[in-house]
Image (cartoon, rainbow, N blue to C red; front, side):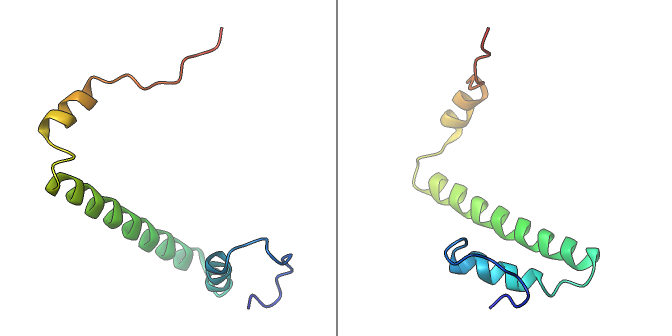
Length: 79
């Protein structure tokens, strides 16, 4: 699949191999930036769709959002 790339068997999933094949044809930084932008938009859309689903099902609502504003979920520092 990925010609010219020496990757041990099982190192990547079939999906990762397809991505490697795709980027092996990238000719410029502009093309790579376009691919990154497309992937970012794709995953942003998926996240938005999931948030909409949670909202429609009543799992997320104004009350939950208000609670989140006051949560402190920082990792405690070690002393």
